[in-house]
Length: 495
Image (cartoon, rainbow, N blue to C red; front, side, top):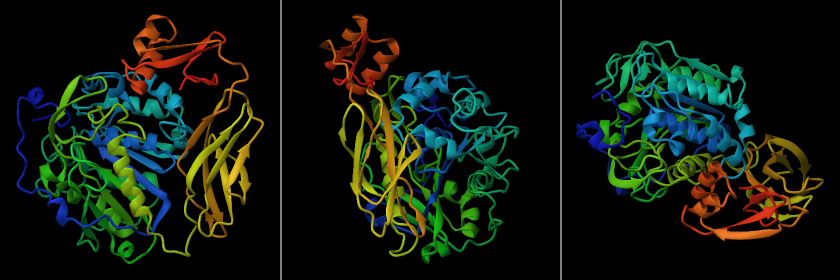
């Protein structure tokens, strides 16, 4: 079988049996622990469906991830618009709507897109990959650097000259791995190219030489069921590689490594954990590696644009099996992984390092010219920095701030960090708000999405956008502000 990405058994015509090594029951796995992790040194990478999902996490939580690695993955929100087959098989998927969605969702459904400019992006595709293919990954490059202009070319490294097929590339022979010319389980191959090392060194900068001998750290199994409900495509247990220094309390980095379809522990045992090379680099560079686990799901789910499908190959949700918001901050798998990240980051010793990130940041009031924020005090903080649309607008010792002098009917995104003598914390989750409009609406109409479209009140793109937000058959109200219809009763922009 040469295709690890197809989500339907009937499309494969072959049912791939699970290997005998399966994850331990959730009740035997310990809760995920917390560690002393530098919040500015968190990154993510993935292969195949994990590559698509790494892009989704990097876009949705751009304030968290300093870098994203994409191995044989595709563009953001591609399968939210088109049948998943148009996002694979060396097609050239359009990125126009993806870019538009990223900009429209910035600061609300996803973190402010301005954060992406600070990320380091690593891309890999094999020249003989026909499952996803070079043309697809070329579009990821264009999304970031070309048409999208979200990040400078200097922050992106694209390795696209290796002759690999659809597989994770390494430069050593792992037990059970296949030749670089074969796209078959476990989809890990000696392609004479160190993929894990290339991604980690590009994202995190120069690293110590990897450990090719006996590793000093430990693989730790943890319970995933506290982070996500059954039926949402994730296994009962996940894995964590913890170097000895990190277990002893030294401040470490964190990398999230996402397997591809048919690569979860329930399918190939510990091969992805041991044979990709991440742990070798982690061991000598104080990097904790989080290995979340997806699992086969034979139930049929309605998807965003691909009809009703099952997920028998245990792919990460880049298609929309588990909700139309699969590639946004509220997606169930995205929330689960970020909850794991937050748990790991919670272990910084008291009294050391920078203060904790401010919690409960919220918009408390708006006028036609101002937006007011409030947040919970951070222990040990001597002040706070407030960022509007990714630029710092104020330093304050208070736990609230009113941003004045704004234009009416404009939307802004905000984040807050805490500071003390040791430095500045990571920024909070982004919140957004829209100033009131000085011109009241002249009329309002309540109808379902199709009714608004047929009456000419919204465009095709807005029909899709609002249908995903409200549901295509659910009534909602539009307001006529001047000559423009919006769903904001204060005549703000359509959201």
